Image (cartoon, rainbow over all chains, first blue to last red):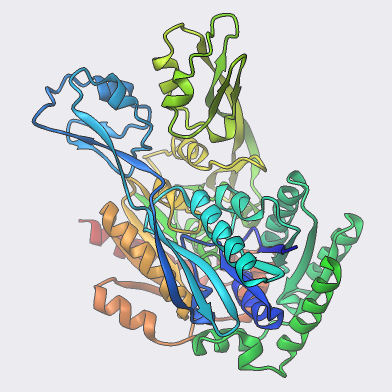
Length: 287
Length: 277
């Protein structure tokens, strides 16, 4: 059976993607996804070659036919999103609910599907990758995340891969919920700052809420060793495994500029050794 | 004037910039619109004076009146209703509160009820009026809560909005109808990539913008080249400094320990105001 893990963080910029890229190298027979569909970065480290592209059409937007419209403004009155003014429909505010279409006495409005982004299946040096790109400013990122995961499962089955590793988006809202639902394990990458701890706790609550087992990985642990200790104590108290600590090192940024996972860029560095240890801990816990 | 601080990518220093800017100005209101993970209050330690719930409207079906015709479910674009032969299921997390189901019901069987999705907290710290939202854990939709935070804008103040990461609906609703947007980025390939997407969103929205480069000198020069090519002004560079990072890890905004930065933030705000005229 294919196992599935998601790397998340609550807060952005804690090193989720850098860690995921190295885990992808270590995992060998895994399908990798980038579930951060509105600001994906993993492809810059894994350099995927796209095999398949799929248009993502989830949302619709109201369009007025100005020849038929008599400006009765019923639509404006009923729209709860303030999307309709005398200037027309603001596609940014329109949620595509269809209320305006329903109330228009002259059938001057219709809903049109809009392309909100694209999903890709790609090949990388380290295995297959499922990823996507939401068009700038679009909504429905949760649905696009679900499509990315569905594609990953399909590929994993076909290619007999026993693991899917998801690089999750920041936050705890719809795209994150879509990237953790039903996975076997959530790994929270945290940095030892007060805001990092605050967001880790909210991410842990989220995993508890959906009854998903959680592990914590501390990145840049030596930035503030007191906070690191506090994280470890908090995790002990709440029976959450800390799978490892990674030191603060500019080698992560250097690897990023080189466009490579750090474990390839500097295989014998302290950072890479820490990640190898983390990977051993993770694999033990999902076996 | 309403200035939004955004970044595309998380962790570039948005909250650091928003809080330090707010601490450098007079007569300030700071709104934290990152309702999934609000952090500004951690740096400001405000005295919370008011907490109020934020609700969204969701349908309630009167089983006495309902004839299970299924019109509501058919109408709902968000699959928030499911009609079975003898029962109707409502999925409140999926509901966008458009009111369409009520409109199409021919038996007047649908009314609406309030459902709590989070809270707004208001407080004061160092003469900054702080407003922030906290989305309930497990709640998918942040936009209604962001709108509620923005409804608290006091136009007689210098308003600073701390936006959520990403470039999707949450960012759009945070930056919509604000006067200027500061994009915080770091000079790395990730920073540049996410900056480009955010610039696209802001161009679509017609919001003028400038860039702050945080952790300057950690990566490469491509962010500078890009800004020049796109005619986006670089408003400020914040160096990579272990001191700033360490202050942040303890929840201390760096202008309180390095007051010379207050002037720089004030000058920057003047530059932004001049761009507006």
